[in-house]
Every structure is written in structure tokens, then in C-alpha cells.
Amino acid sequence: MEYYVFRNMTVERFFGNLAARFSGYGEITNIPECDRYIWWYMAPIGPRPADTAAEIDSYATSLRLVLGRIGSGKMVLALTMEELFGIRTVTSDATLSRAVERYNRTLRDLEAQDSRLKIIDFRDFIRRFPAGESIDWKYYFLSQMALNPRLAKPFADWLDNRIRAVELKRKKCLVLDLDNTLWGGILGEDGIAGIALGGDYPGKAYLLFQKYLKELSRQGVMLAACSKNNLADVREMWHTHPDAVLKEEDFVALKINWDDKATNIRELARELNIGLDSMVFVDDNPAERSLVGTALPEVCVPEFPEHPYMLPAFLKELAENHFPVYSLTGEDLAKTAQYKANMLRDELKNECLDMGDYLRSLEIRLKVREADDITIPRAAQMTQKTNQFNLTTRRYTDADLRAMQTRGTRIFTLSVRDKFGDSGISGLCIVTRQATEAHIDTFLLSCRILGKRIEYALLDHIVGGLKEEGIETITAEYIPTAKNSQTVNFYEQGGFSLLDTADDGTKRYMLRTAGRTENSSDPYQFE
Image (cartoon, rainbow, N blue to C red):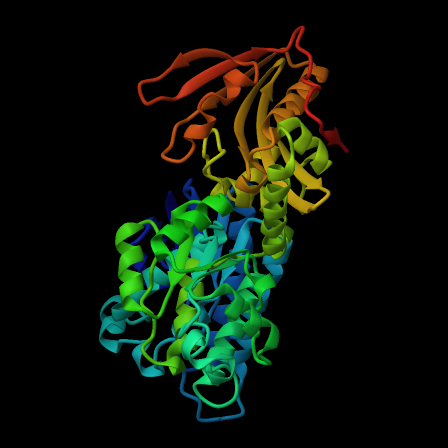
């Protein structure tokens, strides 16, 4: 991924994590072809606020011009502006501050009008450092670098996190210990009245910790409990403690027993049908952290703070490093309910006589529609996050998908609901076409709807629709990854013919639609 950075000062050393080229200072006439663009104009340094404000206003005009010349499908990341230095002897003079505010407001207005533009709040980075550290005047005079070069590495890491948020690359599940993690003390020894939760310190620190964790859950982060405890004692605490913010219903799954935690986390990953690399494990006990970190190296295991008063800073770093997201989709907001509904489906499956009986009992309803401005962000999110049932694992941003649509690419989303609830948009098929031929660029399903043969129903529906539109030949491919081996024979089982297999395992397929009928044996109803 190559970036082109528009800048008004020297910033090269701040992009060590990216493959980037740079404009001249204030140069916007030459715009080379790149994968993505970054707009980073810092507040100029000058003695006259009115002159500086006028220059800042010109930056907003320049950005409008650049957006008008960049290709329709190219993402542009724009950093907000902060006032790094100024001498204010007339304390009532807010000329410069108002110019900065006006510039940032313009960025937000442009973002609302142009889906290619994503705003990154530079204030979030710069406020982490004392004001005196933001500028190194020696470097400023030598190389026109306003920002202190000592901040280059933390800036690069911070920007990398922000880009991952834009790309929707967040972890999925936060696995939490209980004793001395969500509350102070040991429930089995201290009793419900003896644990520290709410009231005075340290209880108030754990209370705030739980409140922020509950908010993470509301933002689509799955919470799971993994604790060596008696489940009955924990449930009694959840029901009776007046300051228990997190209740049983806030967790998608529980492993409260005396098994080792590495085994429990493996089981959680299996039950939730997610990869171990999608999980973060939080535990106050260094021995437990060491066990999980050694046995399950894919799981992220951060160090836990030594003192309860450090919990807010710990959670901020945890959330921003592992669970950032640029914007939330409806599926994010309903994540916990969707996974709990999946567990009810698993219970029903154990009660049914066979798979056909189980599928009929679910009363599954499917809806396929072409992506629009509302559903494109969710479609992009699925390409970034779906690994197991993803035939090609191509990653796209919302800007990428919108650009593909302008070129005639069809983007189909699949919504799934049954008697236990609505799984939301959980399937995607991207199709390019030319004359009477079509190619399936992407075919994927979210892990939470797997195991019900919905993938074949979707494939039949897409093929049938293309056939009605005059498509005679459909090609597709399977590109192997470390996680999508379960899809290796999907197209063959879906009626496609194998054309060839490359040395790297990539398979190419073809289907002629003439004479083909849809499979009507599966008990699904399309809406």
C-alpha cells in the first residue's frame, strides 16, 4: 500500500511505518497516482495572527481542490490541525484559535460530503505530551520540522492504529478474569460483601473499569469471562451486588470453572467460532498471563496494572490499541445479542433429530440486496474481518467498494434472521461482469452463520439472478490462506467445474448457467 502525503512542513521521518512519497511544501498541482493519500497541514508559525489565520484558511481551499482531482475511489486521510506555538500578549485575541477551529470544522463538513475522506484527530496524539515537548526549535530552524522528531516513533505507531481503525481491523473478543480484575479481592474467600467494587478506593476504580468495559460491549466488542471460580457464587454476586455494572447478560460466553485458562480460551474460540488471534486476554495474575501467552501465542496478553488507580489508563491503551473502529455499523451494536442467539441455536441443534429438522426448526429468512451508501461500510468491514469462510480474502475499504460500483461491479449483501433473532448483514458476494460473462471476485460469510448451508443458498441465488440477466458463463477462484481451508472445495460442491490449480494452491473455476436449476431442497425463504 503506497501513500502520497500532502504537507506544508517536513514530516518524512514520521511515516516510518508506511511506504510513502511526499509533496513539496504546499504543493498540490502534481498529484501522482497512489493507493491512498494523506493530508497533513500543520498550523504555520508566524508573529502576526491575522496573516497566519489567512494562510490556514487557504489550506482548506487547497484541500477542496485536491479532493476534486483525486480519483473517485481513492481514500484520503486528513489530520486535523492544532495550534503548536503562538505568543499571545493580547489575551482576548482569538484570531488564530478561530482559524484553527474553522479549518477543522471545514474538514468535518467535507467528510460529511465526500465518502473518500476520513478525518484523524491529531489532538488525540499531541495532547499526550507536554506542550514544551511538541517543538524542537533546533530542528525547526534546520529543516522546517515543526513537530519534535523525538515524537516520530510514537506518532507512527499512533497513526498505524488510526489507519487500522479506518480499515476496521479490530480484535473481536476481550476475555476477562474476575477476581482482582473486575473487582478487588477473591469472591470465594472474601464473599460478596468483602470484595472491593464501588464505594471508596479501590472499589471505585474497579467500578469505573466495569463501566468502560460495558461501553466497549455496546460498541461491538465481545466480552467473555474466564475465571477460576464457582459459577453459582459469581451468579449470586451478579444478582445481588449493588455496584455490579457488568452482569451475566453482558458476556457472550462464560468459562467459570477450575480448568486451566488456556484450555478455556481455546474452547471460547471454538464456541464463538473466531480465531485465537481475534482475542485479548486480561488477567491480574502474571502466572496465568504467562501460561496463556506461552500456550496460545496468537492471543494478545497485555500486562495488567500493578495498582487499581492505573486501570483507566490501562483500559484506554487496551481499547485504542486493540479495539479501535472508525465508525460503528448496526451489526457492531448488536454483536453481543447475535452471539448469544447463536448459542441458543446450538442448543436447539442438540435437540433435533437431524440437520434437516434443525434447519426447518430455525425458520431461516434470507434477504439479498445490492449494497448502498448505508450498507457499504458493513460490506467493507466484512472484507477486512472475515477469514474463515472467505474464498479470496481480498480486503477492501468503503472507498474501494464505491469505486468498484462506479465501474459497474455488483456488490450483493446477505442479511439473515431466524426465530432466535437477526444476524444482520453477514454475507457478501462481489461480482464483475462483461457482456455475457461474470466473475465472482469475493464470496464470504460471517462465521456466526456458518454450519447451516446458507452459503450454498446464497450461491444459488446469485447464480440464478445472473442467469436471468443473460450471463452464460461465471468464473470464480479459491485463493488459499492459513485460515480458509474449509472453503477449498466450496465451488466444486456448488456445481462449478475446476479449470486448473496453481502451484500456490489457487484454484480457478467455471460454471455455464445453461440448463442449470437452483437447489430448492434447503429450507430457506428469500425475502
